[in-house]
Every structure is written in structure tokens, then in C-alpha cells.
Image 1 (cartoon, rainbow, N blue to C red):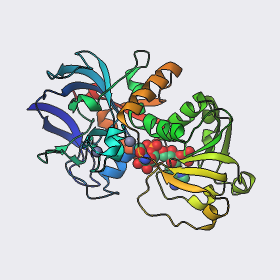
Image 2: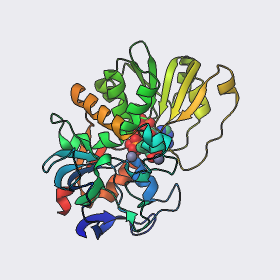
Image 3: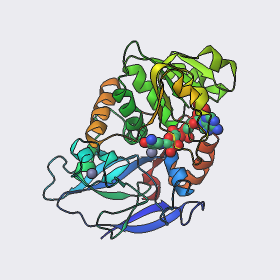
Length: 348
Ligand code: NAP
Ligand code: ZN
Ligand code: ZN
């Protein structure tokens, strides 16, 4: 076994603290990664606070992982020692079902295996995430980070990047499409950059009055504060696609009314509580409300290559691991511009 240092939540809703544990030995298909940086996703907070389902504790969160390959198994063909690599939200899936065969491992019939807070497929251990010094991952679930992207600012692409790229691509975003991104957080701000690079006309809908300048700098064409109710009448029937990244309960009905006929609102944010939904915002203009979960591994590599070509990374605040609990509190107040990334050197 490989000894690893990390930070874990000992129980639900308890502050993260230093935690030593072991990774499996490097198998024939495995890559051992020396983690350099790990982004903090709002899903880490939902998970640590047990807001979705019964979590496994102690829990080492983290699924925006980047680092260098330290060792490879004998069958590994795509990676060599020293490569710059990343690992996102999944580390395994059944590899046999229709979704897995179509490179949509995130929708695996048996359920994808999360990078942390999940049971390993051999049922022998609980997977632990990237707030740690090393990780062992099957090469199928590892991706290359383009050489021109700085590793720390590229880390959030592994979740935030793919989670926005996948629905933008799936629903055909490009020139002449008016799209809205609701919530300018970690996911939202990367989404603005990607949608702008795809050629769309991008609107940010934010509950923070102070994010207008940033939105325009990131590539948005328009910005509206949703605390002003007149925005909802002014923008009725405007958008071809709305992507909602908000992490808490908001009135989805009000946002659905902003869609044109036959258009789609994609739920990305996963608030703790169910949100009441009226029939009329959907019926009146044949609108759809759908969800989207990260993206497959092949598409994650495609997204990274797209970001390399367009020089897209996240706007980050780099912190030592010792500040992780404070960072969670700040994220809950939308007080980060726009993604915290942990410097893993702080616990080596
Ligand atoms: P984040 O950085 O905290 O951003 C969330 C944004 O939501 C905030 O910046 C804020 O933007 C807005 N917001 C927060 N509270 C709000 C409120 N009370 N009313 C209105 N808007 C509010 O979080 P994130 O890491 O981007 O993650 C966002 C959500 O996506 C989380 O629920 C996360 O679990 C989920 N997620 C889903 C997937 C997936 O595959 N579907 C993948 C990753 C994450 P403004 O200040 O601009 O309003
Ligand atoms: Zn995430
Ligand atoms: Zn499968």
C-alpha cells in the first residue's frame, strides 16, 4: 500500500483536519499521480455536509485533481512518468453498458464510481479524493493537461470545465445562439469563457450586484442582477439555452419563462432541497427542463484540448490546505473570484 497525507472531514458537518491513509498498490492498468493542485468544487461542500445522501467518513474530498505521473503499471499505454495529467469526478464505471460503450461513463447503468465518497468497484474500500498528496487511478480515467495551461488554474477544468462544456456542446451552442448562465461561481465563470469561445452571445444572471465588470471581462455580452424583479419581465422569451449553476434553491419557474419557444434550461446546480415546479412555464412555450452530469472521459480530453487552444483556465485563488475550512465558509457567501485551488505542497 502507498501511504498518503490528506485532509478529511471526520464526520458530516465537522471541519476538515489532517488525515493519513493508504492508496492501493499500482496495478497493471494504473497510474500513480503526485498531486500538485486540487480545486474546491461546491460539490465538496454538499458532500462534506452530507446534503445529498449518506456520506462515507472520514471523507477526503476533491475531484479537480492535477499533477505529474510518478509511476505507471505494465499495461499503461497513454501515460509515462513526468506527464502532466488530471483526474476529475470519476475513477471507474462498469465499462460494458451502453453509456460506457458510448464514452458516457458518467451515465453508467451501474452508476459511475465517484473519485471520492464512493465504494471501489471491488467493494473492498472507500475511494478518497484529491485533497491529498497522491492518487492511484486506472489510466482510462486519466486525462492529459495541455502544455500551455498553468497546472493550478487548469485544475478546475476537471469538474467545472467539463460540467459546462458538455451541455454547451450537447445543446449546440455556437454563433447566433443567445445563452444565459445563472450563477457566476466556479462553474459559471468557466462556462462564460467556454460559451464565449464557442461564439455564443452570453448573458450572466447573477444574484450578486458586484459581478458585472468581471462578467464582461470573462467574455459575457450582458449582465443582469436577478434581485431586480423587472429583469424577469424584460428578458421573457429571450434565450435559446439557460444553464443554471446555482447551488441553492431558486425559483426555476421564473428562469424557465426567459426561454424562447422549444428551448431548454439545463440544471447543473444540485441544491439540497426539491424545488417546486409549475406546469405553465413549460407548457406555454413547449419548453424543457433537463439535467446534465459532468461529461465522459473522451469529452473531458476534448474540453481540455479546446481550453488549450483558446487558452481558457479558471480565475483562481490559490490557498494552502490549512485554509480549506475558511474557504468553504467564503464559498457559501459567494466570496471567491472564482475558484479556490489548494496547493498540495502545503501538506507534503
Ligand atoms: P459556487 O462556486 O459556490 O457557485 C455557485 C453560484 O451560485 C454562486 O457563485 C452564486 O452566483 C450563485 N448562488 C449561490 N447562492 C445563491 C442564492 N442563494 N441565490 C441565487 N444564487 C446563488 O459553486 P460551483 O462549484 O460552481 O457549483 C455550483 C453547483 O453545481 C453546486 O450545487 C454543485 O454541487 C453543482 N455541480 C454539479 C455538477 C454536475 O455535474 N451537474 C458538477 C459540479 C458541480 P452569483 O453570485 O453570480 O449569483
Ligand atoms: Zn465538482
Ligand atoms: Zn457502465
